[in-house]
Image (cartoon, rainbow over all chains, first blue to last red; front, side):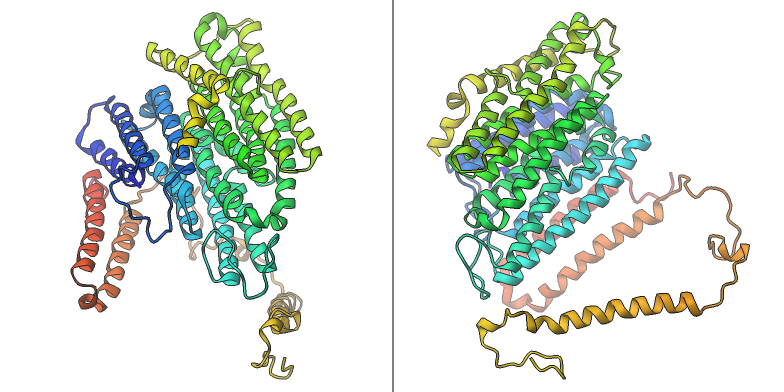
Length: 463
Length: 137
């Protein structure tokens, strides 16, 4: 509850500071202060120091797992602000408005990660989406950014319509908006839903798959990620993706887990297609920015495995995977937004010019590819073991391993370009602060891979 | 199922409600809806006279000849005012149920509405300070 209230409040504070303070450079500091306050509020949520105990008639639940998830999101946001604050300020006039929108997105993520009611799910997803449409089009003079924004808006609102239709079906069948499937007057069995609810659950799943850019609902992702200013692409591919995924996780791995007979097969198909299309298409990309957007589709395939498996291992693994993926992607995008040419050739010889930046990016890429000692490896390992333990189809596990192997190819292409090709990449100046925070980011990723319990998972036990 | 009236008979046992025969009226309605559309479209296409002149095929611009490209920057002041008007108009709509239940809701309801208006006021101050309503540039 604390984080929900504080994030709205700080969003408004950011809005009005934009009017009151004309000086440049304050926005990032104020935003970082805001995230720190949110983190304090999050600590309060964990230890029952709360502003109010109201849960809106049990429509939201702030305990245990999702509170820990919110703290992952907040730490990731903090790192994001520290690493790319300068870029956010450069997009518009001072950046206050964009920071305000980011705080409103955080509000949406808090609702999406703690809903107990389908209406709250809808509200959370919408509060996440609407500021994103604006952020995508924030480069107002750029035609590509405008196009991406319009495309995202039209397709996003269409998928929201599908979600509402699904919710209406579920409500029409069971007369309840609870995320636990209610017994329907049309008959109820314990492994699958009655037809009308099943159709509703599938529609809900498709629209959430759209929001997390899982294939075959991924077509908007490359265009939108490519058209949006790179800083906001970084935000969308990481924090927002995690926020929508927790909604997906809570809905299907929590509430509707008991009726997997109704949605399990569709989920298998979605996972298979996401892994296949994401990885294979990423191989053929010539631009690192587009490669990262396909990589985010491919990584979504792995995260979906946690929803399919939905056992204790999947729950832990989901946290590790999200944290590792989000941090590593922020690290890669920090470099991407400073290099003038987003194509692979734009990175040629970067290791000679900026050895530290190349090293941190390499660690992030290794984590994304799932090389041992990094958080990404542990996340992937958790996902595969969880699926196997849950009795998921074995071919899917094998296929996921093959896809992880394919992903090494396109991540290493960037590493090879940086280290083994000659060239003089054109890039924006890199401050000492950025380098410091990138090193901190890499330490976090490595720590997550080596001491996952000390860094993250022990908190889960204590909640 | 009363076929003549296309209505489900009221005394159907609850277990029977889900049987597919009771959805027949919906299917019929669907068929009629699609049928009418198809009939009208093909009918006008086949029966109507076809006189294709250049003037007729031109984009309709309220009777004025089209001038230049429509994709030009233009002032959005009217649009902005219209959107903001809608926003604050909706606020008034929310007063209606409150006004009806004014007495029943008591002080708690009053404070809630005050909070609601307060949030709107914050937005209003923001748009004024942002200069969204200043007509002259």
